[in-house]
Length: 316
Image (tube, rainbow, N blue to C red; front, side):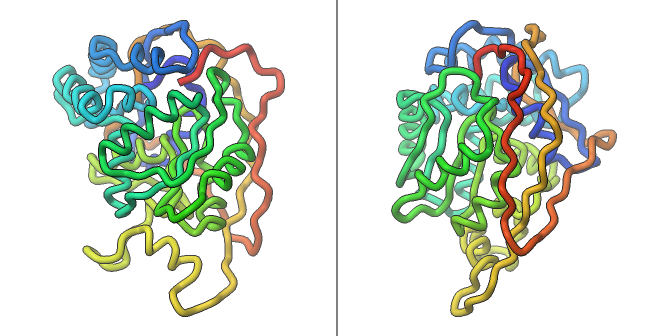
């Protein structure tokens, strides 16, 4: 399930999905409110979630994912669990949220100290910090844009700059919040530069949903998606750092180059067509996943195209 004005997901979610998995999406009804805690509460009401799940029911999904970060952290850990229970009751299938997926990913990584990047205002960013504190995760540094709309237009370069600003002190990982913020092609460069796992809202949502199916998310040079080298031992945090600089050994690192993105096809205003988030189930092959080829140096990240775009609705 996704919000009607979240356009980044349409370009990104499928890129983590294997060819033999189908991704089905429905949107929640339009809410004329700018990005804020009020909007987060409105798009996470249980009645709205139930309608979204029922809209997806005809496709017989095996997992329901609520793809909205703020909507799933605004009620705290208790509220997030209640959302999952409401969706599971409505669809009788396993359900998850973006924020719940984040906590699951951090546990998988063994990460309890993170740097945080958000496009939100300070109050919404603080609400996410409060949620993380409740589940035992410390934010060591943060950077935010203070946006209340047009989040989907933020270019990769701004995301990278914020990440560099946020990583201060000793952090185990970096989290880039908001499912309406493009991140797929920024993750490899940031992991290579920062020497730590980099998580994003869309990435953890798809990773957790696919896990429920016994499937693996696809994506080159992303620490969260690495297989453990020795089952039951080193966490991905150590694996990612060692992949670039093994202990006791200094070597030149081959860092992936970032391919230019295809032209962005703006979604434009979206009519209310029902509830929110992706439904996932094994089915017919989906679109093929773009590949990234290794290179000896990092090429500049592409800027998101914002030419000739229609005036969008508010963002998640």
